[in-house]
Amino acid sequence: MSQHDPAGRPTARVSVVVGNPKPRSRTLAAATYLARELAGHQPDQVVDLADLGPRLLDWQDALVGELVTEVGAADLVVVASPTYKGAYTGLLKLFLDRFATDGLGGVAVPLMLGAGPGHALAPELTLRPVLTEIGGIVPARGLYVVDSAYDDPAAYQPWLDLARPVIGAVLDSRTGATA
Image (tube, rainbow, N blue to C red; front, side):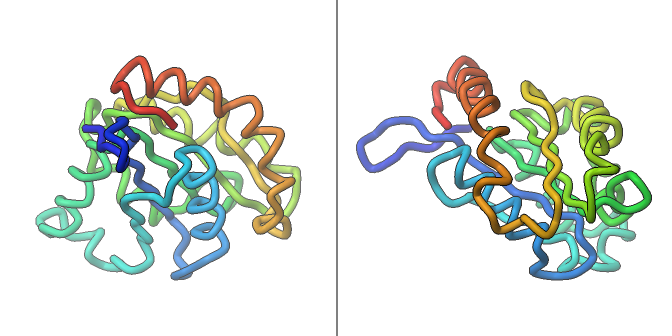
């Protein structure tokens, strides 16, 4: 489901999903930055789950169902959470539980922020397996950023240098869209 830039070239449809219970959080800023760096444009959709609150508990909620469908159809999805007890938040779990095992059709990027390096493996150990279980393609390792550096481009650059070519190649081979 790729889009086209003004010159007619395909571009990836990019979604961001943030599971921080605090609205407009550092996690949101980090995920939006990462999506923009990977895609070369602003995300097409940003889902700040804090704004949905108790709607996530209602399995019949039409808005949440629509968001699941839209995120599932994106070419690239950055899924971000702060690290809580070595894992992603329950808020994010409520949203991800809505996806069928083939509900996420594009490239998924697990991103987690935390207070220190002690939980640096959390994106790989907790978030990546869920994203693959719901159908996401995760071609690069998950990214962990110390939250005090969430607004420092240098905190992302080594990961971007390794992941951008791989993610771009997967997007190109699947959709003709470039990241």
